[in-house]
Each structure stands twice: as C-alpha cells, then as structure tokens.
Image (cartoon, rainbow, N blue to C red; front, side, top):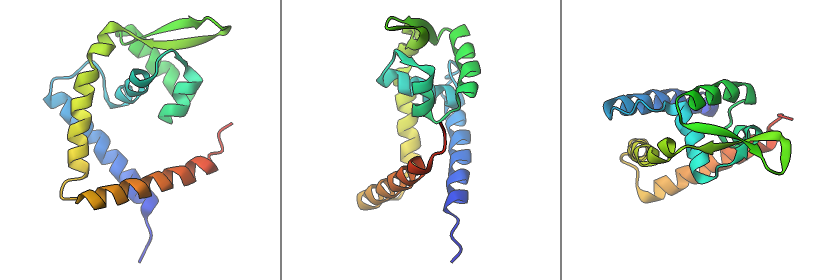
Length: 146
C-alpha cells in the first residue's frame, strides 16, 4: 500500500475550498470569500488580536494576511485599532457588518460538515476527527516558523 496522506489532505483542501466557494455563490453570499471566512471565523471567536496572532490561528502567512486585511478593511469587514497596551501594535476588530455575517458562515460551515461526513457513522466521525487532530499536532510540533 502506498501511503499518500499528505497528497490526500492537499486534494481535500483544494476540493473543499472549491465547494465552499460554490456554496457561497449558491446562497448569494458575496460579502466574503472562503479565505476571508477563515479570518472572520477566528475574529468571531476572539477579536482585538494582532496580525501575528491571527496568522498563528489561521495558518496564513503575515504577508498574505496584510493584503487580505487591507481588502477586508476596505469592504467594511474589519477595522484596525491601536493596542492600548502597546503603541507599536495594531489589533484587528470586527465591524457590525461582519458580525451580521456570522450566521451565514455558520450555515455554510454546517453544510460543508454534512458533505465531509456523508455516509459516516458517529464512530467513524469521531475516529476521523481524532486522527486528523493527531496529524495536525504532529505537524504543529514540527513547524519551523519563527
């Protein structure tokens, strides 16, 4: 048996991104795309975080995030605010508009989860989630980012 976990995970990511974008289009959700949804998801759980913290939580490079945040700020989804404890830092916060989009994102995410686990038993879902988390932990321990 040829082991191809990394390749399979890459293919899953590619296809799931495509399907996520398709669902957004079907639902006429044009306020954000899939990548921006990842950023919003983190901020819906904890806002007023730095770009570095957002980078760590999304897995997106800070250089990539900077241009994405610029576009999201221009479209009224996020705002940059000065850190009251450190004048050198800027924090990211949600706007009322982006808070209103959380339900849309939750619905699309639920639809994606249903697609991911179609025809899986509860035990299989739990096992799959546990294995994916172990792979993630293995990779996180080896992360060479400084």
